[in-house]
Length: 308
Image (cartoon, rainbow, N blue to C red):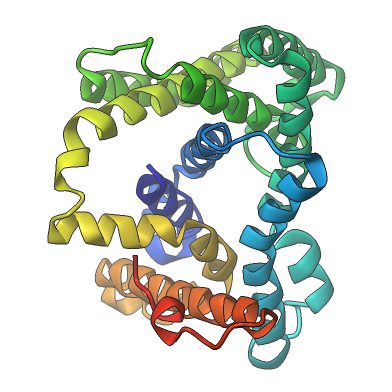
């Protein structure tokens, strides 16, 4: 699922690379939703720990990448990539957002335990309330640069946590078909909503939320039923490799995306994406090196250079 998230998020930032077809640079909201769903899902697979030790593991997983990218950009990238911004925001809004979400979901688990559906309903009410109170309903695209996305995506993270705890209790037939239908519904709503009045458009915006949630669920079942068997094949190894670099790909992509190859369109899209993946892999290696530098063991270069 993180492979699909990495593709969608990167594609949404490639508008200038599509030359005369920049409308094809889309999918960012879908990719973000998939990543947050996966984060909630995997967090609830582990054991409960004391908060400080639990949060330390989250910091250890994310911030070596962020710190190493801050160091690299300080020396090699244009000056607008400041060390301060790289550490605080991971090159964007995503890292700081998920670090706050980790705190929220830890205490949500403590308070609601086996009643996460109750937490989901309560937070859904909070989300809709914020949507109208903050005037986010007036935005043409509330998945864009507005603050609503900082509130909304926690709902998807909670959904992933619920499916982690109850994944054996649910089944979905034809998940691929459901994903296609929900995908079409999501973009259909975005396409036609502006043809209506402001109030109706605001309500239609809300219907994109269950579409996104449904896409995450149907993609989960599709991957579980159709893709698990291929994970040890060569194609599967590529999928696992790119999916494992999802965070690194997000962090590096803005610095790597360039219009200098637009004369090769559409090959420029592939070349730039491969450059992003390669840079993300190097960043992962540097991050592992950084971590091993501060423990008491000898460097394990095989682990540092590990692909999957």
